[in-house]
Image (cartoon, rainbow over all chains, first blue to last red; front, side, top):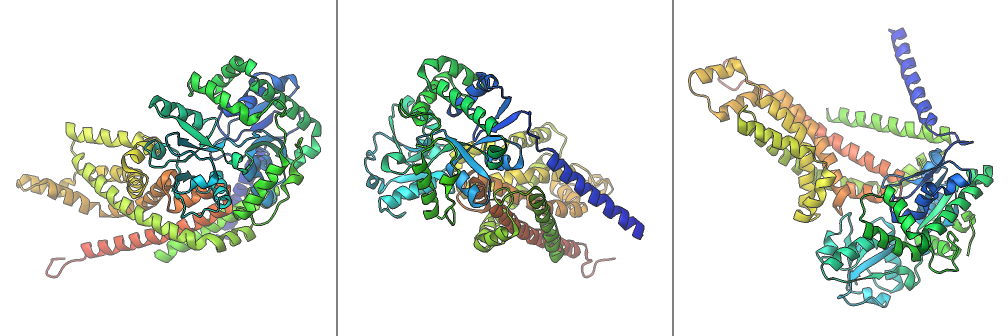
Length: 333
Length: 255
């Protein structure tokens, strides 16, 4: 009987060790292997530069073998960096700050969006939002727990408005409440959903406007390229080569002269979007990535990062400062 | 039975957490990837009460959803028990509806019913009813020949009597399936809340996922596990009592 129990225990222990080994075996080894670059979201025009870097041969020309992988709802680049599934990734500033608070070893190499695409759409026939005080009495959509909630709370606080001065509705994955005019100010990603909604409403003879928090002094940083501190320390040359190739690809992708070639490459990855929408999305992406000719793509706006951290502390998203600026290793403004 | 359910859940939950912690410390992962014990306890201290209330909210919808799905399963099961054209048509329709992913149907449901209580209830019922339907169809389509033969031969067989005989003879199976479907009802409600609701534990999990907060998820899973264990335990106990009552000889009956 005892022998039987011992055997069972040994089998169970062996099974657990096997499971653990399987878990660690899935983490790819690095040296000389394919570099994995995890995006934040699905392939679409918002990641034009990332797509071009791979399909346009920018990585290959730099002597790198890079696999650009789609992101998605359940994917988190920073976690993948730590688990060894990715070598580079795209993460939003709030993800980086939250990760730093919990001890993750992450550094920021470049800030892709100079202007946060998270904005609010509203119909032109509604009173224009010229000042933050114009938000008073509006029915505003926010995604509870999302970035837009933090941004809107900051805007309302700045306007000295309380939640009683506005009507807040929870935003879900579909636009029905906005389309049915149940909610009049709706959060969208300006260069993707914003374009689609603009087109949909234009078909119904309705014009729209966008409310950009950055115009009112709230610069909450969006997507940035990140890697682990260890990667940065152990393979600085690889990181440098990767970033040079990636940012060159972004420069190429944002140049209007290259539009037809860029759109053709995006189409290969994003088959579900119509050609005209894709073209308008690319047009809307340019000023967010490169607001003016002088701005170098990828430059890090350290002040905006500091503001993002302060907002998150104020909004109790994090408990204590994380000194995020010490983790910004790319070129800063 | 109730306490056994709870401590069995606690064992499974603790094993899961220990497994995660083992991976965390073995791989030297930060609290961002897998939270440490201190962070889990700290999060539990902050969130547990709120999450328990959220789970109770979800459970209330799940219980109603389960009732609706039981009614739906019996309705379709009884109608579809015959091997007639109508019976097979109902079966095909019921099977096809189940084949559609709920995330694809959800937008239609939300447009028609809004994103409040009714949508949660409907999605919970839709996820829960299919396994129930399979069991009910299986039971209702299998004649109890020894008993039914007598009523058929004497011309006293009615559809109500047929259903009663088949249900009574398979009471054990039915109570087990109904108790088991409570987990599905709960899962269905959580899915509905995750997709579109502004209350319930599914909604809270969605917020925690937005913020990549695994500690919150673990606390939410604990709350769900405890409450669903209690609910299932209660269902099983009620089922046992019902069986005892139904099978016990009544006064004056011959044993």
